Length: 486
Ligand code: C2O
Ligand code: CU
Image (tube, rainbow, N blue to C red; front, side, top):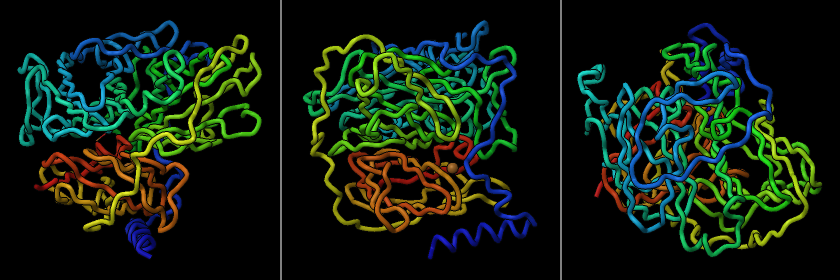
């Protein structure tokens, strides 16, 4: 009933503007931006696996990357690569990452999925100013947060379970263009529970960051900065996996662990293999945003909203050697290809029937809150009809308490919470969806849906973020503070 009320309000606003609801509301978020550069054919590039970070320092700098044949792409990078280096840390062992900013603009680093104290969480106005400071345009001087010049050390206690996290830029109003230009990388947390499982590892464990981009004629990234036509999200016409256009990867006929991350600004994916293996259930999901599921779960298709991660095991021995298996997006075409080569090899890996015991449901909530995600008449994206304002908290949960948060919307919004992972408890007042299992930090809220989550706020007080992870929506103010109080 509530859901219908929200829809009604949106429709009324549009009616007042004299435009039909269905005409204005596209089926999927985002608007396609076409490349001006000649594009390669799919499956000509090799998949690359980002290097693991050595040491504890990352330099943010411009670099010329070879993405399209014959052209270079001037990108914003972590240590000169896109994706940035993969940070690998150990559960329970505190880590620090010092970021130096050699880019021409301020940056902010957020560890997405990190259980991180407020001071290191990448609050959007806690910027690292570039050097020399004279180069800074003080466009947001009035919103100066806890700002540093040239560098900042982020401290991660890593009191959290093994999971596929990622780090990316989070600057107020500029997260979309900064991530699009290349500021994103993996951060893998490992722990003993996961190490003890016979999952595929080494060369058979692949982090795969999926993004879409458009390119200018000279090979640079094409982004419609400030173009109101794209405030529903920017979609590129090239799919990059780990920064390569529609790459190919040769695999043994054996099990592989794929850590899939949708790091696209606005594009959603419905991933499927073509051909599918006999018997279906090609993707055996073992984990979600917050690490291992209790039990594995088979899927034919995986739906990934922006920022979601799916940790899956795929057994390439289920296809005949020699098969070229396309990974496709059912809504958008090719993503990458796996070529099964070589004879049957030794495969010591398995997917055990029980993966983890640390995912019992949370106890009943101390209180419930509702957050409505919608668009204002001025086109801004809003939460509870408010555009983002640093320092204005929409919720003040108490440390240690469980709350239920209900997200309602008229349109697609992937909703992300900082600080703690949560459990989805219902979708449209019903059972949770096929992709809602386990510990999540981003939940896919689709048109006209209501999703309820349970979350316990633990360990750290202070100001954290709740926002839409469609980065154009986020930059257009669909973000809110919540303050965890002692
Ligand atoms: Cu991945 Cu607040 O963001
Ligand atoms: Cu959104």
